[in-house]
Amino acid sequence: MSIDTVRLEGIADRKATFVLVHGAWSGGVIWQHVAPALRKAGHEVYASSLTGLGERSHLLRRDIDLDCHIKDVLGLIEYEDLSDIVLVGHSYGGMVVTGVADLVPDRIASLVYLDAFVPENGQALFDTIPPGMPRAAPVPGSEWLTAPLPQEAFGRASAEVLDFRKRKTSPHPTACFTQRLMLTGGIDRIQRKSYIYCNDPQPTTFTPFYERLKGKPGWNVYTLPCTHMAQLDLPHDVVALLLQAIPARSTSRSNPNA
Image 1: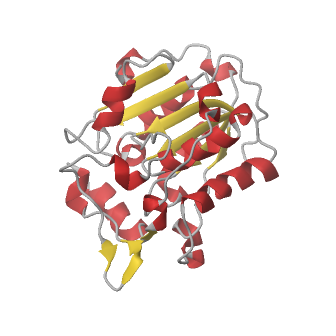
Image 2: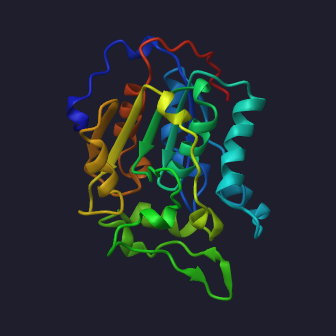
Image 3: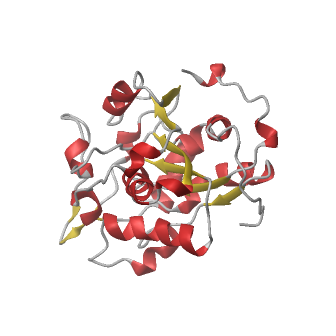
């Protein structure tokens, strides 16, 4: 399904709580165009950075792993008393939101993967990368860190997007990519799930997830004609699809200053 087929009638009256989880090497700043647009529409939005990344890069340490980042989001949900959440994961964030949703499915109204990893039980992120696709390399002399992918891995990204990556990315703890995610089946209780696939270039690391999910019952699958950095390439289209993910009867409180 393309963005042109999305119907947004009636969504303006449905308020939701969005929790946006960024991908590897970056931080919450990746949502700099998306989060304000959602707030302007009257929704509650949280887009903080995971430990050791973005504005929290000063907390970078060797023992940060996937569990740590899952706990980051669980802590946010618990301390902000969030429920009826539209939980969104981009790229590596798909690993994180899968772990979160599996543990607190009753808090999640809708689960959205934006060109993201969708692991199965027992898989680590590195287990899911198809042969021939770019693989990140360790930082020389600091193998516990993984360096950002080279710019050419991001297709025909604009100069603005490439400049953003150069200025706003930093090494990522390797354990986040090697730790296996053990699932309990809780995620299966979430009825509304969506996958947004960015198809420039073709194929991509995320093509297998798109192919697996596009015909799967219970999933809404969309495509965007952009690079992996969809929040920067096509922010308005991303916002439209995230609004589409709001359940028909969302009852979340609204706080535009969140």
